[in-house]
Length: 106
Image 1 (tube, one colour):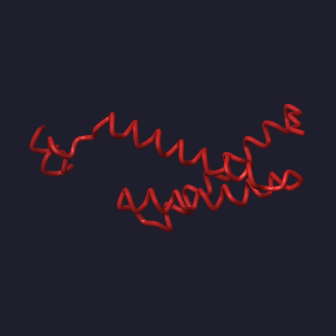
Image 2 (cartoon, one colour):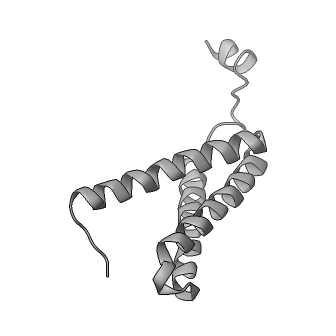
């Protein structure tokens, strides 16, 4: 079993995952991803805030997709498409839930 893991899967003692490193990287990524739209709310005009937020959030998702692809050694276009599509789906579903429950922020 150890030979299979080492030879076929490429998992060795030095290439095992580090949960603490992953937790800190994930926390930093989520913090960075949350701070950027918050900065938009400080400087964008209130009358068209949702459009500014949506536009800049898509831009920030693209930037984070590039960073994650470069960091992980993945395909940059695939990462951008995946992160942007699923981020947009999450925003649409959040807006839909707010609409269904009559949430009005004014």
